[in-house]
Amino acid sequence: MNEIFEKKKCYPLTPNVKKYLKKYGRTFKLPLAYETLMRYTDSFPLGNTLWVTVMYKQEEFIEINQALCYIYSLLKTEGDISVMEHLRVDRIDFCLFGNSNPFRIKIINNFNDNYDYFYVKKTDVSRIFGLELEDILSPNKVNYFIDKNTLIEEHISGIPGDDYINSEVNHPKTNKTRLAKEFIKFNERCFYTLLGDMRAYNFVVEITHDFDDVQYRIRSIDFDQQCYEGKKKIYLPQFYKENLKFVELSITVLNPQTILQYQIEEQSRIVRRMKHERHMLNDLFDTMDKETLSSIENVNRLKKELSEHHNNNEFLHCNSMSEILKLNLESIHKK
Image (cartoon, rainbow, N blue to C red):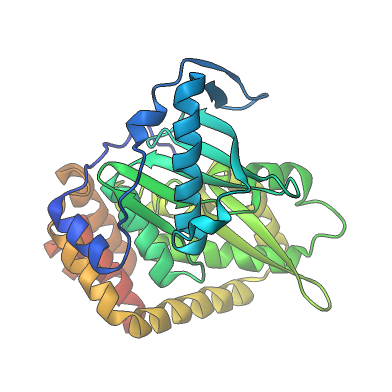
């Protein structure tokens, strides 16, 4: 089983990455910075979770409320402030766990009490590249933007993987075959895009009701371990003990031939996305090539393990995580 023993280093935003983000419309001038939210005066635990709800001085919260409502309008309506009059910040939560130490903002509609969430985080280059690769190479679209050292992310809805395991996996109405199929495909996407640390609490399960049944989609909500770790298994969700029930389900309801079929299906979809978004993907690789994404030790270990996995000595000539990632994706073409 996989174990991660040390906290990943946070890689700051560089002019090189800013140039890429600006080209693709990921930058906005924000009225509030991450550091502003750190000026809370009090906090209290939010249930039995790793989150705390934070409080601010009244006069400061008035400004924070206005700024956060505007940021929400940027996410949803490209900054159309006419939608802000009936919105307010209902709660601000802070997570003490993880690399990005996010603030989760709960926005509520005064007319009907409908609510939504978004996140304010510290900028980390690893996470940005993870979000971009998810947007380009997965079936999912992600909405985020940055301003200097502040990262704004749209909420990704779904049932947290660990909650889903406890409440839904063995439910009689769960379509276990379709769920297993999606876990196989999720496993493939993580491996070929080098997205690590996909333990159950770092992804959600989306459920869509079809005309005759339900469909499932597993989506990552944590991209901090993008192209960082040196062990191949870190990029395979099947090897985490937290995901054991998904693995047991998959090998129970699917035979080896069907598992191989679903793996090839997802690999084919990745190839189609690579072809369709080749210009943007090349820009992303050019940007990644100029960045340090991990330690030399991790790079050397991963290239050896992937060389053995793919039976391809070209990996041994890689000098960076970016080069390893490109060759890993290119290996699908060769298949």
